[in-house]
Every structure is written in C-alpha cells, then in structure tokens.
Image (cartoon, rainbow, N blue to C red; front, top):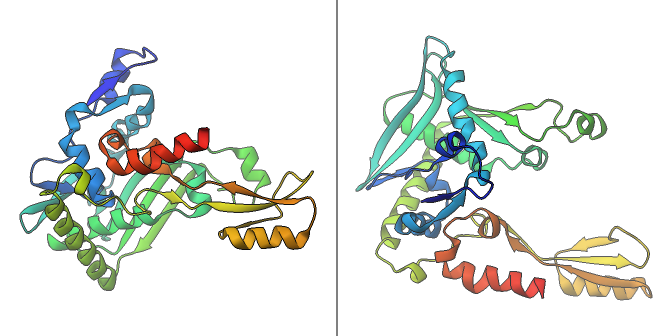
Length: 292
C-alpha cells in the first residue's frame, strides 16, 4: 500500500500509521470476515497499488496506545494473543485484546463516534465478538460474555447535558452474553463466508458479486414532503409515489424533495473502490449525476 503525506506530517507519525497486509496467504481474520467478499479480494489483489493518506489513518495510533493499557490487565488474563482455527483450506484468525480466563470474558478496546452509540450501530462489533468467542471455543476455552470498551472521540459534555439520547460519558461499554445457540449461528456465518470467499477467488475482478447493501453501509433514497417557508420536512417517506400523493393532498405550497441514497462505505471508506466495477458503474456515476 502507498501511504501519502499530503499535510507533510512528522515522519514519526507516518511510521506509526504505515500499513501492512492484514491477512497472510491462506488466512482470513475476524475483522476481514465482516467485509464484503469483493472488498476482501480486491484489497488483496491490488494491495501494492492502493493509496491512503497519513491524515486519514491517525486513529490507527490508538492500536499502539492500547498495548500500554493492556500491560496493566489482571493476572488471569491473556492479552494481544492471536488465535486461529481452520475452515477447510483457510485459517480463520483473530487477535484478541484481552481474555479473562477466570470469568470467560472477552474484552476489546475501540474508538468510535457518538453517532454509533446514538443509533445503536453495533452489528459489526457483535459479529466480531462472536467470531472471537467461536475461535476461543474451538480451541477449548469457555466464553460467557463479550465487552467492548469504547472511547468516544467526539464526545461533548454540553451536548450530553442537552440531549437525552446522547451518551453521558466519553467512555461507553457495549456488552452481550455468549450463548451456545449464537455460537452455532456464527459458525454458520463463518463457514458460509469462507466458502464464498474461496469460490470468488477463482473469478475475475468484475465477476465477483458486489458487496451487500449492509456491507456497503447503504442509505436508501428518501422523499421529503416540504412546505414553502418551513425549514424541516413535513414528513420523510421511503416511497416516491406516497410522498407525491401526500404533497398533492396537502395542496399548494407543498412539494417533494428527493434525498438521494448513498453507499457510504464505497464513497468514503473503501480503499479498493478504484478497482471495483460496482463503484465505477453505480456509485461514482450516481455521485456525478448528483453533482451536475
């Protein structure tokens, strides 16, 4: 991967965020399994040509800071340990921040925005925690709970005082129990994902199916019924015809504003988008039309 330094930041910072391949040949990590198959394969195939800037990677320094924190964990814990288990010819791996062997608790450290907490967007963390639990279980360990200790990097005390839905503290804990049923479910997810990954490795770039809407972080197109002179919408609907019917029923001065959907990850967070035909044919074209 090519790391640029557009802001000419100090060399120490550049070295701290320099990227290495996340997966070794024949291996796939827990966090990689959360990505779309197309993103996984294109990232691997075009790694040497991918480009990212130091300024967009600064939060990766958090990983370095966490090591110092983990040194203070309890005597019954193991920290920063890589664990693995084979699924066919592929080895699934995971590097666990902390595992409390006495109580069977996995602990992972994160940074996040307040937005993630406000909307309860924890699906990716749940799957990551369950994959870690699955790996430990396959290696003979007992897991009872997963905990994600989260530093909210944009927390505001003043906002917390005004907004009841806003997190009270700059540290947020997301946790859940690990059950036998959920271990079976994540086992199915892992095996299906690995099977599809292996199948798609035989395909050309353009023949690999696009990532799913969830994997692209898709936001659907919305239709806002607006009233002249009013800043906020009267109502926001998913269906264009329903919005137009409402505007007509409300009468003069009402109209429909289209709020185009977007594939958030494709547009802002996927480094291999330049090699992705879905991005080039759909997302990029849509962006150009919206800007016109």
